[in-house]
Image (cartoon, rainbow, N blue to C red; front, side, top):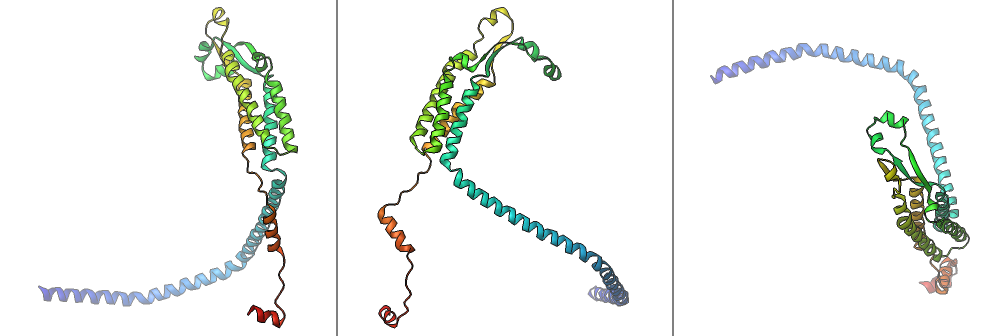
Length: 269
């Protein structure tokens, strides 16, 4: 059995060897033909591809130069802006903008009473876009508290302008206090009056009081005043250098003399 397997394996080896010997010359010929075709193709393609690659890399280099120039301009602009728009000035501008928004919100409708809202809710979306819910009892934000927040907003604008000229941290506490006062008026006076349906419930069916854009505008302005005031008060302060620190920095900046003479070199040794 083992002898038969040996004879069979030898026969298979001889057949495989003969096949490889016969197939090797055509493989060499095919290899030479493929290499010759590749060389001819590359010789034809490279003169036509080289200008395109040259233009591509030139455009890429020009784009890189423009990107670097733009980045340098952005860095310079950011550095110049950081010198002008300091954290204190940015906080003062936010305070003034919040005060202006608070004043403007007092003349915008902050509440209304919708009539027949359940009937309009059952309509499809297309019908809701065409037919709006009828409203009544529209009131501005200033009507609820007799325009009390108008002088508060004007005071915030004044404090913001003063903070632009003089950097005083206590101004931030005053602005935060005005913002808290505004929040108290909005939540304790405007919110209950805005959600009060009044006498319309007895006259019409399906009435509901809703808050309009004026309410959210004055609420956002008051919150911005509180946040901006606290940030202005808690901003990083400048570190003052005392006299000893100035002397030490001056000594560090003073140029040292070189040990040029032989006697000085000997003493240092």
